[in-house]
Amino acid sequence: MRSERLTFTNRDGHELVGKLDLPVAGEPVAYAIFAHCFTCTKNLRAVGRITSALAERGIGTLRFDFTGLGESEGDFAETSFGNDVSDLVAAARHLEQTRGAPEILVGHSLGGTAVLAAAPNLDSVAAVATIAAPSSPSHVHRLLQENLDEIREKGEATVQLQGRPFTITKEFLDALDASNLPDSLDGLKRPLLIAHSPIDNIVGIDNASELFFAARHPKSFLSLDEADHLLSDEGDASYVGRVIAAWAARYLDADPRDVLQPDLSVKNPEFDTVVRTEKGLRTDIMANGFPIVADEPVSVGGTNLGPTPYDLLTASLGACTSMTLRMYADRKQWPLEAVTVDLKYRKIHARDCEQCETEEGKIDHIERVIALEGNLDGEQKKRLLEIADRCPVHRTLHSEIHVDTRLVDSDDWPMTAGGED
Image 1 (tube, rainbow, N blue to C red):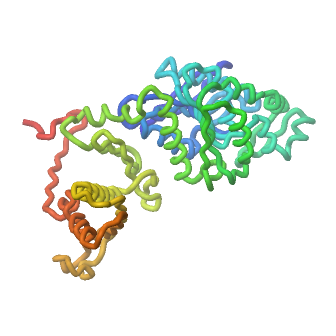
Image 2 (spheres, one colour; image 1 turned 60 degrees about the vertical axis):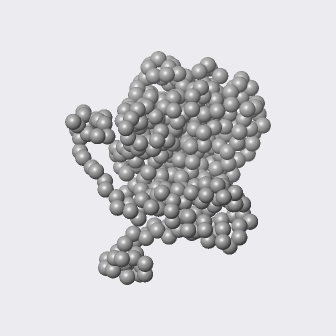
Image 3 (tube, rainbow, N blue to C red; image 1 turned 135 degrees about the vertical axis):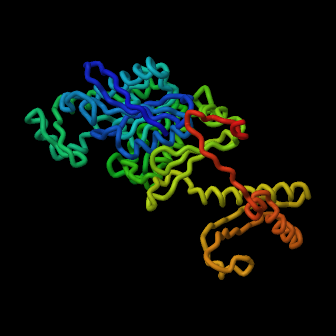
């Protein structure tokens, strides 16, 4: 994913600061806007993981700080839920004028409530997704429970939210109470995906139920199982992003995967695979036109957003094994119903390998376990085990391999597979 800083002006003349997260190559097939949670900012880690997952599928996402939060101008104490909605509309207008009209709105927590209210005002929006969203803006009262009396009596109070002080005014609460979300849902008239965790202790699962039953079809629900309200587990956040991308694709004019093809494959037509790493260890791969992400675990400096290079190696062997057995059984018309291949890569001492020629040091070892389903007899199973060692990738791993590597200047790229004359 690559990101660009973006600024725009809201209805009150304040400059709002955003970040446009884009696919690693090529133009996005669609644009989305992400609305963050109450008192959060665009830089919440979960937000970045979600937009990264969207970028992997070719969707460019604008995430920005609402008025008075993060890098954006304005006084948070003077804002209201209505300001958030108008900020979203301003973001959409700017995106439409400079890049492309947003087709997807995604909102987290109160940001989810805000996108539901904003969507009816944006003709370009084709799909809306909420994550842990309250069924009413006034749900924020729960977060301010200890200070409600003071706010009502004195007109405002300073409260601690997520370890930071915020001034909350009576006008802010009154605006929340006046917001009528059911009216927004009635006028939504767009596909809606509601994602929520059943153990969310900030915004309870009952809110998801209320939203779901109030919304019209088409509507979908995604259970986030054991996720917390802020999606602090990176796996939960990435999962949400991938599901939203897959779900929203149904309502877009183009397949999200299409946008990733031009810059990484057409640029170098004589190469089958292109790999690019920018910051960190997260690596984007375009293999025969299909996007893949590789990474390393957090423990070794990665972000754990994809399989490791050795995971991909064993996956290649496993896929080749499974396909080869499927093709062989079909050709023989044997009753093979399914093949499951389990693999594990590790380094072992050469002395522990009875079949290896190397006697000292360590060697690469792949353990492969094959499960065959179907009414196969003993001879058929024995033959399929022999065929497993004949799959092309298996043969490649056991044959002599030469990797021809050369360095070129980025300005000279692309160049043909044959190199310079």
